[in-house]
Image (cartoon, rainbow, N blue to C red; front, top):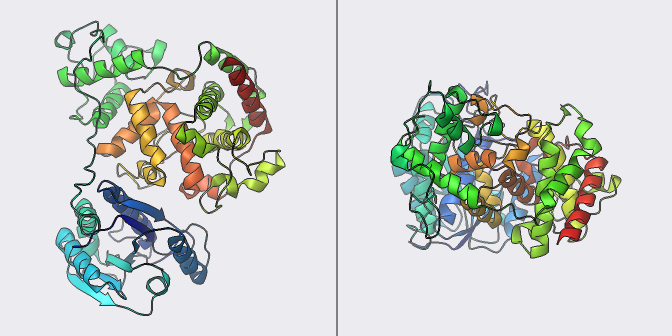
Length: 529
């Protein structure tokens, strides 16, 4: 079996040029699938599985084309601009709506053996009929990609038999494709989640005030100082913790349990206490990353800004902690850029391809408020955080703990959106910097939570975490450590802007007052370092 070290994978069709729709109604309650939506899920999941096997993967989704000819050319052009060994396009078939099982097939021009192997393995994993490899010399994608290519038809989106099997066996299908293309994963085994060591105290680290064995078991309905301590540890209410273990506290406990990979029952017993004590140690020993005294200066500057009283179009005034929180994150980004941090350098690089880069997409609007993004450096980073400030208000009204969009049906761990900027864990494929940022903030979750949460009262629906594994960890960390959400979104905007509908539709407000505040913060940082 030939495996590959570098692959470009794209989803078929596009956001504005839709493919097959299994159901005429388009209702999430229907048993059928939408080709474009599902192809994107498969591509993102397959990319992650391949990266776990050490394969270099580039993902592309077409969010701009409005006709089929442009769509095909855009997809192929994106494939051909990358160095890689193989091209893959992901599609779903359609024939006639019904319950008949239809199956999977793989289309090719030159790669018959690979198409055969993919079809067989996907059929076994998904319990599909194996329709096998099919040579097709009339498809634009197969004829115009420069490298060997296969077009995958995962199953029939208008067959309830196929779609039921697809949903039930999704993880196995992804693993089967990844194994064919990338091998068994010996090159880079998946990293366990969580990296929260359990419990093991490193030398020199003081023990917790109360040994785990002496912690009381807590659950819904309990009250008192132990609940207060629990609420503070989990970042719920800070100094306003009420000591009442109600639904909100239970939800946050379950979210934390999912994040660290233990039984999510909402009961705080010895195992959960071990992880909470470890979280307390990390928070106590963590660092803000800013020079001493700078945080207070930045907060004071932000609180004197006209942005504090600015009524954002469609969203009113920001919560009292939002502008100061964003200001602190920008100060940290400026410090990191000075230090040569790789994520900060991505944030500050000159505008690139407008299909991928939000700054290139907004270049004209940024010029209108005198922000130039044509060169690497602070002005480009300032433009990015001006855009971020507006995006946070548009996506969550500045609420660090915002839960998923309840009108959406994306509730898988990797696709469920969460936090200030409504970003999902599958965005980690946008840049290697995403994993680096996760590792940094997982080890040291200091992330300006005390500032961002001012004036916010989280609810159970806000704090709920969906799924398990890395996706659940990502959702929880994005709310517990808002700086993590800020910096991953900052990188994501530079590499995969289409993730955010308000960005695509240019609905984000660019405030000159935000620009001016950020420039003043740069001066504070320069004086402090």
